[in-house]
Length: 561
Ligand code: TEU
Image (tube, rainbow, N blue to C red; front, side, top):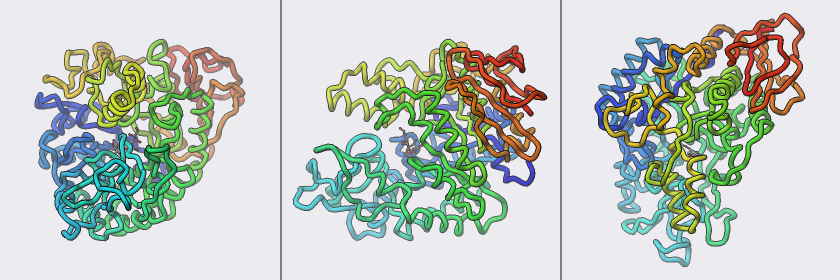
């Protein structure tokens, strides 16, 4: 792929360390467990590993609440283990990016422990502290400085009697938001980033990076009577955001040779904004994670279901592809540690489990952008049949259930149905390496139960099976590495006149690749767009007639034209 930055052609594998591989039998994945499985990623064709947070943490949000940004939580290992992992990754020609979680720290971080003591200590202004709403008594319901709700239920403010003020937390009370307007906060963050880059890592995935600039007035927002509202317009994609990212680039990345992968997770970002942040001239980031395609089955809040149609999926994917088809850059993902498993969500994890998993993978990987494979996606791992709330661990899921069932008297069965559909724990059950009792993940009791289907759905069962989901992912990644058109090519939709079919073309110079995918449970006939002379590069059905103008359920075909 001529001259493109390495992260345009590489495929990124996301590891959720707690659930990937446990080397010491404590039931929690760790760094030594990752080292032991690197060759699986080499076999798959992975170029970059995104490792979820492994820093010391109060573990209220599984590491997204950090108490020390420059060390490793003992549950995952040590800094020496991280250095050994980095060396092992580099020795295999792969790269490592870490998770940068600097919109907030843990409430147990020394910065916050000091900040909460008084209004006059050196860290007093490192977070968002506000007096009770005028005319109210601090700590009483309704005394919060504004009416924003937190992402994990409840108000976005917690009262600290010691300081006689509230602090802001967009997520859990264990995650106080850092005040980026304070230059000392920015100094500390940039110094920490430089410390990690000096250690040899290859970049960062930046957690909710578009939330770091807040509207200092922190105004009330429309909200149901006595309820909380969505403060998003006052903390997402604010005008000051670009200034902070420009300063980050000037003080961290620009002074260094080489190219670092900078990925910004940006809930609520639009394609146009993504283009602004990633456009080639003065790219503030290499790419962003958007959320439009992973909220199509939600209506307002994530727990209220909506049926996502193929048209919904296609329209959203196409909108993002077209916006970034001739400038800027896209991330491509179906799964991560916050999303339910795509084969259960948008595919068919019963009748057409293999076909739908591979059709969805084909569509994603042949788009323009950098593909991400989330651990277990490469073997088609499915959602978990959670039986009761005791099976769940995620702070977001537990808070939702408590608020719905204990707080509002909702039917526990309905709440469990919503959790089986959308809980983040669907993505956090142990990686399924083998069919053995602990799924090859741990010899101990795992921190969260493994999916019972690991008995047949696992790496060992698929690795040497030519028709497996694993082998299809491997073929897709190899295909991407073999053709510039799949990396640099533009994107255009192919109109087939069939709602169930998603078809598109990629063109680069005189190379054209066409993709046709039937994203439904029914066979469908259609007309192949290009004139003859096609070569079938890849299909997800074992036997496939390249000239057939009928696609079987979830059949995907890739042609070179
Ligand atoms: O997620 C940000 C985010 O928007 C998610 O909260 C997502 O919207 C939600 O999980 C969907 O229900 C990042 C991390 O990926 C997530 O794991 C953390 O919980 C969150 O930030 C706070 O750090």
